[in-house]
Length: 134
Image 1: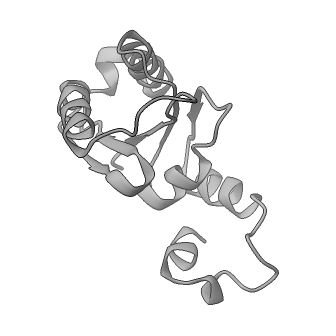
Image 2: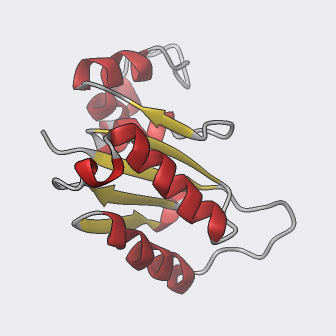
């Protein structure tokens, strides 16, 4: 089962907008901690695939803590969620979260379903992202 880290960046108040170039640079830097990395510029989120490297960090929790330390060393304010499904991880990466490590897809799903929905409609009616999250 492939483990992913979702690194959601929260710009500091009063700071200039984060450029695509800067986000791309950070994405490349985080690739050092996994096999591959990619970003979603719209949500300022970077994803890193562990691909067998978790043992180097003592497991998923150690990997998340290492990523947090690296981000803080670059002066970034982030939330890191380690799990399995990009959309679910992104939904869980909220301000105030430092490192959240999820042990299974079922735990990941349960935590997302416990989040307040944007409206009282069904997840499927909220569109493809919420349908995929659920």
